[in-house]
Amino acid sequence: MPTMDSQRLPVQFAPSAMRVLILGGTTEASALAKLIAGDARFDATLSLAGRTLSPRAQPIATRTGGFGGADALAQWLRDQKIDAVIDATHPYADRISANAVSACRQARVPLASIVRPPWQPVPGDKWHGVPSTEAAAAALGSVQRRVFLSLGRQELSAFTAAPQHNYLARSVDMPQGIALPPDIRFILARGPFEQAAEERLLADENIDVIVSKNSGGDAIYAKIAAARTLGLPVVMIERPDKQAGQPVTSAEEAMAWLVHEMPRSPRGV
Ligand code: NAP
Image (cartoon, rainbow, N blue to C red; front, top):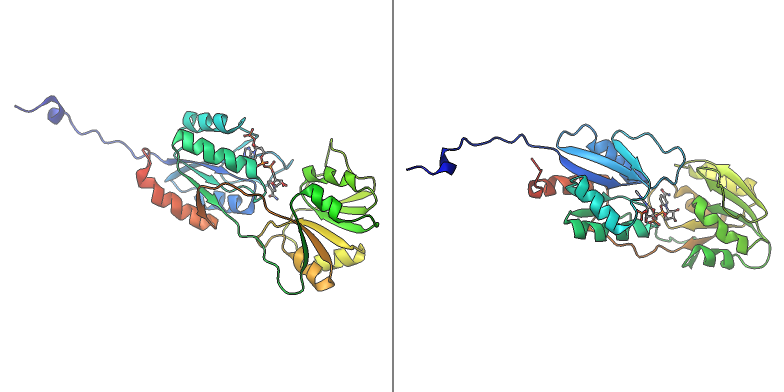
């Protein structure tokens, strides 16, 4: 006598796409969005913090703004039935990465993190490492200097503590609603930058010292190479300790990881 179960016709579920959250704001996140767009195996959303007023157009769905902390991110992952998360945030964005590790653990969602290797000093570099933006301002010293700041808008207020210097700051957008040192001018530009143009800029502006984060990657390395050629010192703000899931080093590796994770996903094909 056949059981009820064996009498049932097998139900064929159409395989559904794997739902992916990409935490973005970087070149690698945009590269991954490009790779994943139009791939029917994935249904991906790119999340941006909203730091840039007019971010680059993206080929996949985007959402903007904080989630409200780790627990809220965990809830969002559950609500959106996310199968996998890729943390492709900036090397200095350590809070969102800590939140991602905690949220993915809570929601039992696999997490991979694109870890961009830092720049390494080479002969001729004159780097002075400091642990924070505040320490960078202090490291400029008491004598007036012409300083090139290549930092996020939100970090500029630290330099109000060193008002004796002349600052030239490059950022994507004009800062608004933050305290700034009295003598500061802005160049609004978005990378990538060429070394020859960086050398011209630093020479034309009589820059004495550069303040930079060790962002890694090629897009904005030209200023570091230019400083080396011109013999200029670089006050290098050291990287924070950033939490990570499964480390990968590029958008392509993140894609390979997703394909590898797919069979484990309850929604995966
Ligand atoms: P953060 O300090 O790690 O994050 C602060 C909060 O912003 C997070 O707790 C989260 O809010 C929200 N957030 C950050 N990234 C998000 C994302 N992709 N999607 C949704 N919410 C996000 O990061 P940050 O304030 O953005 O930046 C910190 C440092 O990284 C700064 O030094 C900044 O200049 C640098 N950075 C550089 C780039 C670049 O491309 N050059 C890009 C980003 C950041 P909730 O807790 O509410 O979820």
